[in-house]
Amino acid sequence: MKVGVLTGGGDCPGLNAVIRGVVRKAERTYGDEVVGFLDGWRGLLDDRQMPLDVEACRGLVTRGGTILGTSRDQPYMFDDGVERVKATMARHCVDALIVIGGEGTLSAAARVHADGVGLVGVPKTIDNDVAGTDRTFGFDTAVQTATDAIDRLRTTAESHDRVIVVEVMGRHVGHIATWAGIAGGATIVLVPEEPFDISAICESLRRRHQRGRFSSIVVVAEGATPAPGTLDVSEPTIDEYGHARLGGIGNVVAKEIEQRTGFETRVTVLGHVQRGGTPSALDRVLSTWYGVAAMTAAHEGDFGTMVAFQNNRVVRMRLDECVASLKYTHPDLLSVARTFFP
Ligand code: F6P
Image 1 (cartoon, helix red, strand yellow):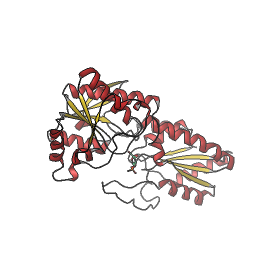
Image 2 (cartoon, rainbow, N blue to C red):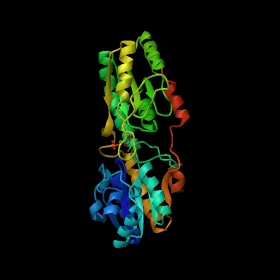
Image 3 (cartoon, protein in one colour):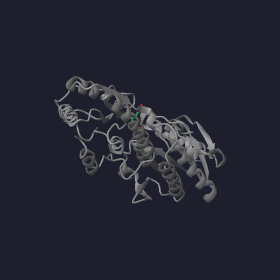
Image 4 (cartoon, rainbow, N blue to C red):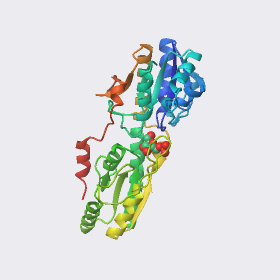
């Protein structure tokens, strides 16, 4: 059979390792062929692709980004989008797709499958918010990057007796903030799941100073919001895909802390540094496992599924069920983080 692969949405470490796993399994186990579509769904809409074989994938397990390119475009942005996808597949004799993406890309995949295209999904995102899987690949690397940054910021915060606010990614969920916050020994962690009260945060920081600790690290997920009526923040602008353009809550929180407490405060927005670079060992293994498992599902014709990591192994879930909701940070873990708040 011939399988098409695409990577959609924001990039993340491990995408290339998935592609490599798919190709290896296809070629060496099944004698199947693989073609890569470029820039996510765009490649299928515009018929842009590249052949993929084991030679083309050598060394990819360590390389960040995606050799296929990515975009947030998807078929339902166009009246004839699904027909164009099917036409491109037919032109290249592609029997099925392996769609590697996060919430947006996989939601489109579930609809494309319902419209008659055989496909298997692979959950990708540093945000770790795809339901049905304990882990998306890319998350572990992002947490390590954020933790390394917090470790570095701590020493300078201590030297200057400063509060440092670290803004991390996480538009709907606080997985990165919570994990990196706990790992980095943050003073306070703010997540989208629990709107924050800036007065309570400032009070906590004052208490800490009264106990003789004059530096603090406050980790803020980019999607964190103040509790209603506690603080005015400007509405984010919306991009062409209907996503709020986030990034900025760290600055708001830092300004308020400095004004209200008088403690000298700085802010660091980690941004896309969390998405770049080589995957961690865990993400390399998870991505490879996902790639091999997705190709196995595709070869067996088990379409409309998503490979998922549960109880330390990769299983198959129904894709439409996985995209029906997001996976939020577990309240137990949020409570662990809160245990260390002053
Ligand atoms: O892929 C998820 C994500 O990294 C979010 O955490 C973040 O809000 C968003 O992508 C940023 O998107 P862009 O790269 O388009 O600015």
